[in-house]
Image (tube, rainbow, N blue to C red):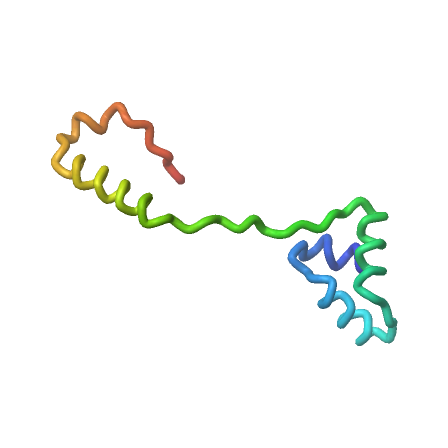
Length: 85
């Protein structure tokens, strides 16, 4: 049940799994769940924290935008744009 639940929803926490199993009548610990998932070849991971822009970066972006505000359209033809279709 543990492996099936995590496979369907990878964001399931160990606490959620403990609660689900308690409702089903089985008492397990978080360590047991971790060991079981590790034996099945599944690893846990945490989302990486992305640093916020520092004031110096904000100023640099603003400066760049102001400098290029009046650039003609032809100057932008050689820029590679990422297109999300």
